[in-house]
Amino acid sequence: MFQIIFNPTSAAELAKLPKDKQLALMGRFDEVPKKLATDDTADYGRFTREGRHLYRLREGDFRIYFEKVPEGIVVHRLLSKGTFKDFLFRSKLGPAREAEVEEHPEFWKMIDQASKK
Image (cartoon, rainbow, N blue to C red):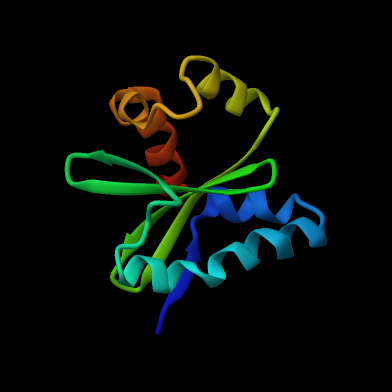
């Protein structure tokens, strides 16, 4: 069975959103199991570090960062366009520069901190 697991940080970020936005974000995961199973992930941003693969999925003004695990996926972060964290992160990187993102230590620090909560 494919599961969508929200870590404490991403669950809190999701809970702060209005119900209609929550449903829209959750609806984006309908296609994820099939795409991950067939490696059809061209629509997702992909970041790699030390053998760990993280994906970025966009839904409107949100960016969803998740990782494939044996049970399904773990959602690490839900970042809204225009937030301070998103601004700090994105202001240092161009919108389509995944190679720079995966080398940027602040990105991985943010992901790891969310996983430890």
